[in-house]
Image (cartoon, rainbow, N blue to C red; front, side, top):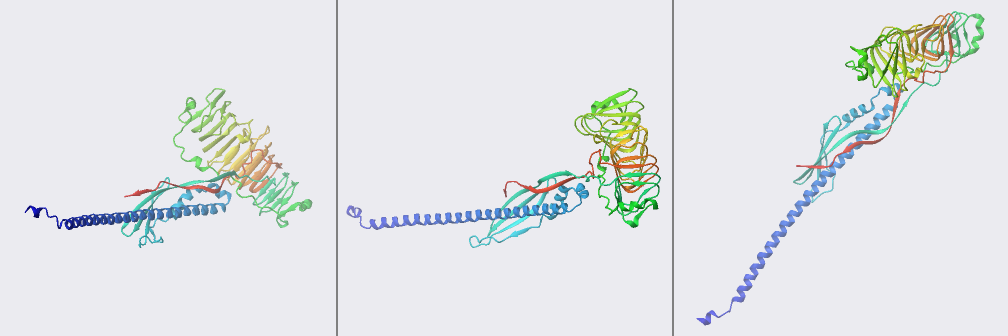
Length: 491
């Protein structure tokens, strides 16, 4: 029995068998593990590749959007550059740009499929663009990458900007060439005379009395009539020139809307009651404008001087009714004062009498005639939207120093002394000089009549070259039209 127990024959085979089983189990486990690792690695690669496809689709769409935005800007700029200056001045380039962008950005869903095959599959990226904000204008681009059963989605917000090169210029008329320049007829009666040249774009020029024109006469022979004893005037004929276009500044209608409540700087409250600034009975009242103000009425009574310190910057007074009743307004400071009169205007007295007309402007929206009487002494540029005008100069000096810009249909200038360098821009009006009226400057009108001893003496203006008054912005290269947020992955 003991001999049998000590018999080791056959154990080697058993040990070898067990060792073989152990190695096989380990091998199979390692093989299974390697297979799983391989499967995981392949899945991760496919998943990562899907992300890259989504990102590639997103970048491609962002590039396409940038090109669309740039082309839109260039198209608007090309259209803008073809506009006349008058239209450019009122064209809201930035607003039109954003409108055009909203119109041209393609928000339809699209799919990109032209990628290299991945793992035997054909990748694709599905794109959608949505507007998520209007002001500022923001678009969200979403891209979903697909490879077989793998999908990854990324997105990016794109803000539309308007960062472009801008330079501004204020257009002005070239120096005047004619003492009187009209679209229609020029007619002279009595002993009226013109020292300078004249031109009528399409009307006739008629010398009825003992009149004189000592410069060139721009009209055709068939449209020029004169007394027989003035036949030598034919030698003065030249080709007529068109009346310059856009000689009137664009009237600032927007300044007359949305005034709201009567408002004024706090330092002026002691002078104002119920929206009316009145000078009272003190001989002199001084106010300092610290900002713009809106009044129901600005009233300066007899023999009272209202001294307005404008400071070093331009100021605006918006007033329903302006009444200077034998009173006086003087300006101090280096800034300019603009007065916008909505309803009624009356000045008998003086306004900026000793100052430069370039430092003051009055804009009148009312419908009643704008009258400057011989009891007035003003130094300002006058802008009248539609009303007719009457200017009566006094014997002691001109009632108005400064240019006249009117869109009305009639302008009458009478009296004696006139201002030097006064330009009259009245392209819609019949301008009539009566009595001993004198304009030293230039007149632009629809038609013109001079009678009595009226005189026009040609001179360049002293009221400032406001010209058409158009501020034109020139647009150059686009600096930055889009701003991209970071790319984010969506669940």
